[in-house]
Amino acid sequence: TCGICVEKCPFDAIEIINLPSELDEDPTHRYGENAFSLYGLPVPESGAVTGILGPNGIGKTTAVRALAGEMVPNLGNYDDEPTWESVLDRYRGTELQNYIESVRDGDVSIARKPQYVDQIPKQFDGKAIDLLDATDERGALDSYIERLDIAPVVDNHIDTLSGGELQRVALAATLARDRDFYFLDEITPYLDIGQRVTAARLIRELAEEEDRAVLVVEHDLAILDLLADTLHVAYGEPGAYGVVTDPKSVRNGINEYLKGYLSNENMRIRPDAITFEEHAPRETSKAAPLIEYPEIRKSYGDGEFSLDVDAGTIYNGEVLGIVGPNGIGKSTLAKLFTGDLTPDVGELDFELDISYKPQYIEIDQHMRVDAFLSSITDQFGSSYWNTEVANPLQLNRIMERNLTDLSGGERQRVAIAACISQDADLYLLDEPSAHLDVEQRVQATSAIRRYAENHDATVMVIDHDIYMMDLLADRLMVFDGEPSVEGHASKPQEMRDGMNDFLSDLDITFRRDERTSRPRINKPDSQLDREQKRAGEYYYAE
Ligand code: ADP
Ligand code: ADP
Image 1 (cartoon, rainbow, N blue to C red):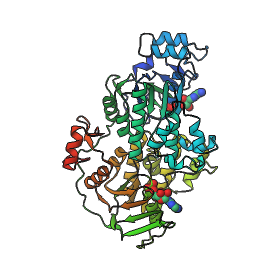
Image 2 (image 1 turned 120 degrees about the horizontal axis):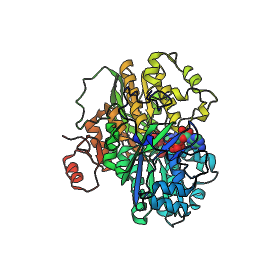
Image 3 (image 1 turned 180 degrees about the vertical axis):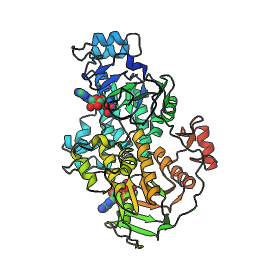
Image 4 (image 1 turned 90 degrees about the horizontal axis):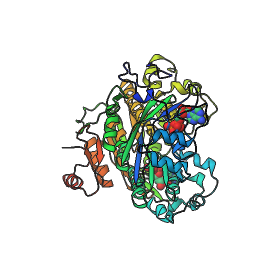
């Protein structure tokens, strides 16, 4: 260990290049002796969206409680009663001075969207509209309901809503308030890309047109890039200490984060860079087919929704990405493959062992994580399993916890581990990125890929995070159609064709960052956007 971390270094960094200089100073807040310490604070700014990029457990909620005036930060003196005057002394002459003066004077009101929208039904009993009506402080609610497309569900009871519907209701309920400061803890889980882009647009409008300060934590980097004006990177040792950097430009902040090195801070936060390919991967030599399936068709009830699937082949050992809007039939296809549903037309006559991780994870048994996982695989605890599954999914810290006490992100990691630890021919994961931070997404991606490679196993992954898809998929299956009415699934395609189909449907193009080649969403109707659309290059360069 480097002497700071209470546990083994999460990045397996053998050499710590530099200790953060902030750690020589007193923290902004320390919960107690040997308890979590927060260094630095993000700077909310009226008229702007400020982003925070960093892992869970790094002190974001602590920082927001201070900025909301719910807690006076103690500047490390946890024995004394803290005062705003001493906080102001610390931040006098900095960009935070005015803001802290307002907090001290009780002039800052806050609206916040919680991270785990799945918990809302446990806290609120009633229809969606009852929850929403109480928040309509600016007369903007109707417009949010329309633009977030939640009108069809507002009269439904909150506990019947899907995760994506809850996310949009929660967004509307937060943005509709009339406050000075809005804190949004993750906006993308369970939303498809179209919905993510809409949410980003609404948040930008609130900041710009209503001159509000918005602070956003977001792990979908393509969306964060679109959404934020400035960015604080947060790093440290989750649970032990967290450092919030001074604001950076969004482009630089994301680039430095991906590179694993923060220039101004002279701080390495990860041994390796996360890299993207500008050009489509070459057509891989095909392994043996795992499944060849015919054209299939499935409708629900008397045809309220129907799905058409083109005939296709899935190869042994490949990772097949599945993309498309919500409500278009992706889970229906998964259930056809697992045999939970039978097609109306076409026959799926393969007998495969399929291990399935659903989108909404319910593992509410009263059981410890270690007991649960060892009931799934004999490999549990072997050094192979520890290296390939437990370490990349950061399970060691939560092994002794009860399944019912896990946060959304922790539950996700356990569910991914449970899925890939089973003996199966085909692993099917629905939205594994939900509630994972960037580091965890990258680790989970490589665990899934490596596991597939080592076991000759085939993987199908449904996800909306473009960066994750880019790192994960060999080929793509693209869904289009009209959500909730009819869906169509293409046969598995090469990445270039698949991305072009998918993004042309969405009318979104990506350019490549000059320095890191990471994909960045083009401004609609910008010169690049128009050129790329004309050339039919929505994602990869020719
Ligand atoms: P994040 O929002 O980034 O996930 P939090 O600010 O919620 O992080 O928490 C950061 C760390 O501080 C966590 O390890 C948490 O357990 C710890 N923590 C939060 N509140 C308290 C408290 N009242 N006393 C002691 N530790 C706390
Ligand atoms: P996706 O996974 O792409 O979000 P789904 O396959 O879950 O889409 O759903 C596609 C459509 O089928 C949705 O309109 C959904 O409401 C509808 N649907 C899903 N399951 C059923 C069912 N058991 N009975 C009737 N309609 C259903």
